[in-house]
Amino acid sequence: MPPGHIFSSCKGGSSETTELLCEALEPVRQALKRRHIPCLRVMLISMELRDAQPCTFPRYHMPALEIWDRQGKTVAAVTASVDLSCFYIAVPAEDKPYVVPAGAPEQVATLIPGYDRECS
Image 1 (tube, helix red, strand yellow):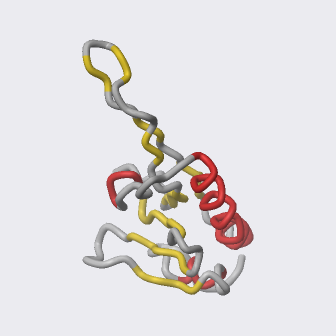
Image 2: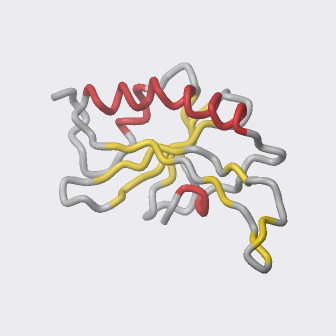
């Protein structure tokens, strides 16, 4: 499921807000990379069309990191809060996302199912 559907889009979101959120995810991406956990930054932009003409401004969805298991199945999605104070980790098997403080991006990797807890 794309991250834009897991989390609601930024209210009044703009390309500048989206870029800030993408930058906030970079420490998490680096921490996952150090542990050899595959991930991809995903950014969705949508626009409503009527009669093949755009009728709204682009809608920027929350950028996210999608994380896969060793078989290529998505096991989690990570987003940054709009105020950049924390990260949300959505795991399909869980009812609520995990919350990690923005100052501890390395903790995200410990919450990803299917990966060893020690650095490789």
